[in-house]
Length: 245
Image 1: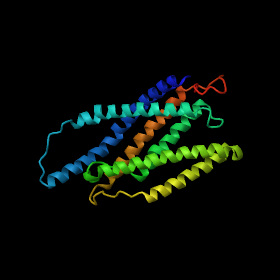
Image 2: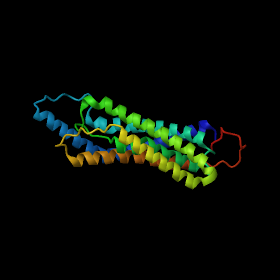
Image 3: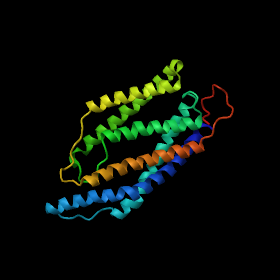
Image 4: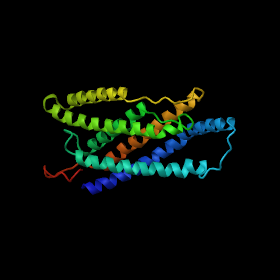
């Protein structure tokens, strides 16, 4: 399987993952989002603000808008993961193409989504200050970049340690080092605490769980589908780095 074919399969897997994420977000995330919007509307009404007509209705946002966003996101992530799998094939010890696809997807989810969202969780409307959205987004992206860079370093270290420790012990040691370093980074980076005291705690909790759950669905389905679409290489020249399955 050449890189181009793997890229197509990754994008196809991402399409399926995006649709699954959309269904989860629509069924689980939208109720929590509506709770945040209701709180925002109540605050505006109490302040005597006039209601403005929405440029895009909530129905369109919650259906077509949300669906397109998740599909585009899934396809993009699927393509990126497929390219990383192509480069990682044969470099993760005894892992074949299918196992490599699953490992790469898992590492991507943990480093680019799970741990960054634990540090800077998603927030519903009216739970943060509008003026700080730029700084909050910047902090989140910086944390993602550092986390991904550290996981790449951890993989390189694991490859070197595997020579003497074996892949399992090397992976555990490198993974522990990654977690420790990221905890240090998280402690050094500023925290964001802007949620109003009267904001409904259940709405905030449900929204954050739904946001993380939707990401878990996207990446989990991506791992399963891409793993199913990637075939183990039966025979190929040892030095051929263009074949990935």
